Amino acid sequence: MSVEIKISLNEGIYLKDPQDSPLGRNIIKYSILLIDEVGFEAFNFKKLAQEMGSTEASVYRYFENKHSLLIYLVSWYWEWVAYLIKINTVNIDDPKKKLKIIINSFVSASVDNPTTEYIDENKLHSVVIAEGTKAYRTKEVDEENGKGFFKNYKKLITMVAGIILEINPTFEYPYSLASNLFEMSNDHIYFAKHLPKLTDIKVEENKYAEVEKMLNYFSAKILGYEI
Image 1 (cartoon, rainbow, N blue to C red):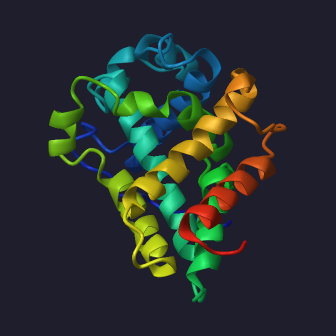
Image 2 (cartoon, rainbow, N blue to C red; image 1 turned 45 degrees about the vertical axis):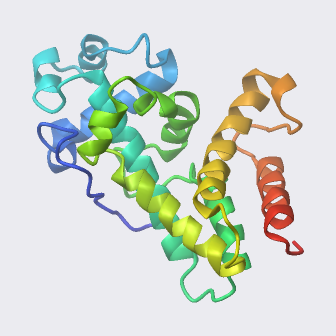
Image 3 (spheres, rainbow, N blue to C red; image 1 turned 30 degrees about the vertical axis):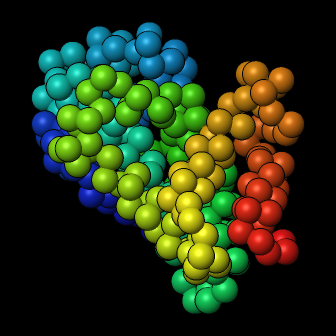
């Protein structure tokens, strides 16, 4: 993919949009690399500033805290997945084919976009798999949801739920299935790598064909169509 995109995110997440300056883009670039390396618990703005060769104060000009930064990164990823789905389903009329493309996008969103130099989508994918739920499984989730912080995720799931209803208009749980497909795509990659007794699939480095096959199987069985 060779199209650079600027993703629009809720302005309440950040103090200053990091996409708009070289320093801000470095914050995004190095935060992804550092969280992937040390984990979100060990990550802090002091370490990030050292990694960037900048100051801790400069990071605080963009984000109030590391939780806000994580929401930003995860929201960017949700919007990136939605973008991949939209461009890959253009001129596709069959909703079953669309859902197959959606599932492929869920598990293959690590494909790097070389023109977005400050985002390593492969590393960001790893961060979302390992740390993504920490963005919203918090005591502040209701307040943050009220501020629209998770709008990108809800838009993504709404889009997928619509495709599910095209396949089976009488299906009662389209949003549940849509969110489960997305979460399962991340959970089972994580399980296969770290807790293999919790899944039946195996993954190789950046190769998730078994995960994709499993999600297509569940979707076909639940919605009542042949793969």
